[in-house]
Amino acid sequence: MTASPNPGQASDPGDLKDLKRDVEETVDVAVERGRGFAAAARSHALNFAESRKGEAARSVSDIADTLRDNGKAFDDRPNVKAFFDSAAEGLDDLAGSIKSRSFNELYEDAEAFARRSPVAVAVATFAAGLLVARFIKSSGERQIDADHGRGRD
Image (cartoon, rainbow, N blue to C red):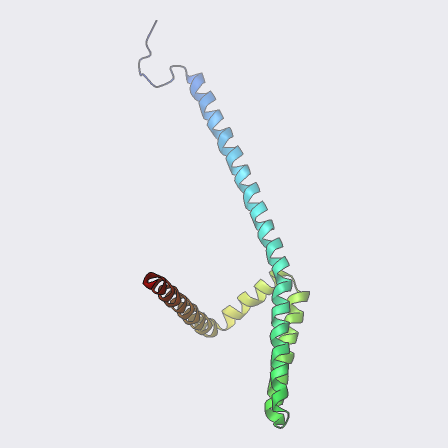
């Protein structure tokens, strides 16, 4: 039995070439599977967004109906009622736009708006953050109160 000069290394250059080829093939297979996975994930996400688009349109339409109903309380004030009706009509238009356009078109429009009005997007993001923080804080306080109330029993 002859020992190889460097333990752990292949003694034949052909073995190294075979090993290199095997590694390259494994990498190629992994890259292809990764691409397939990414494509499937993207397709799934787009399908999910398209299905949720209808629900978003219905929600916006429901808000418009609520505004319209609340505007009826101002029949004696035509200017205020007109404001409610105009807002409801704008929301109905938005709901129709959401229904009729693809997710990609809506995304491109949102991106274009963000590029045209970065300050408005920053303010809206800040306001949304405040609302979410407030919601989380109040939810936490209610949970603490509930836990504290159970401890007394």
